[in-house]
Image (cartoon, rainbow, N blue to C red):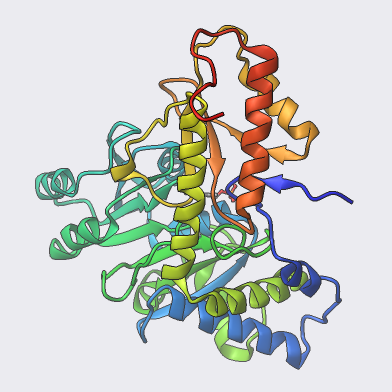
Length: 373
Ligand SMILES: *Cc1c(COP(=O)(O)O)cnc(C)c1O
């Protein structure tokens, strides 16, 4: 069986050890599984820089489930939520909040610009009824990395509560929920933690969970109840994704063995830089400037070369089991190349060769691929 190469931001290529961990059935009430669950919670707590204040609450599902659980369990309908938006995942938080009938204020900025902490300060100072602020740390829409620490400082100084979508960054960008005085963050198993998809979690301020607890927005996504159950007997309230938990346990082990978040980040940056220089050599342009780019995904402009059709190129690559993502931004045509997961330099080379072959066979353009190729 040939290996699919996923240049996608999760699910992504997992290691052989992570996949092997899923080859065994585990009873959900066994001592072994309870101890796996506890251990995964402990490791996530360390990774997110949680001290005694915060609790790791695991949730079945993808990252969006954790976002819904976070908003539904920590924001009341009498609260007012400021959402900082510079991409599709910020918009998703708005959608979730509106469905929950949370009172929402939106501060939008352009998709190629980071959220400005100074603008957040102005908004918070001019609307004292805002109780919570939500922001996406790494916007997978473009790959932009928002300045979380600076935003968190502005929010904390004004005694508001910050909720963070760290789904695309936890494991790859250093952060500390305790030091930054963040109320809660949401993340999932299948991005920079490099586990299998199916498990999400919220690291939440315990006192806040207790204060808002009992908010009956949903039974299955109630963080307060779920946290109480983990505390009581270490068990999940409903059927847990046992294989995925076992895989995440191994994936977290591997993150530690690799050298932790900083070392993983430099591996992603190396991949990212290979991807950028490869595409630039072929004549493509990045959508973002390097100064605002995170380490997990690169957005590339669709060129106007005669004969170049994005869908054709993606289909052509998928015939060799190489998968890129179409773009997600509103203002222009782009595609995205993920840098995360178990990707090797030779995988990147294979992908770039495929792109070069597609161009050679389909595009008529004046600029030949002479520079170096
Ligand atoms: C992946 C991702 C999500 C969650 O998407 P799912 O499809 O539910 O996994 C949310 N926010 C960001 C920034 C993401 O990268």
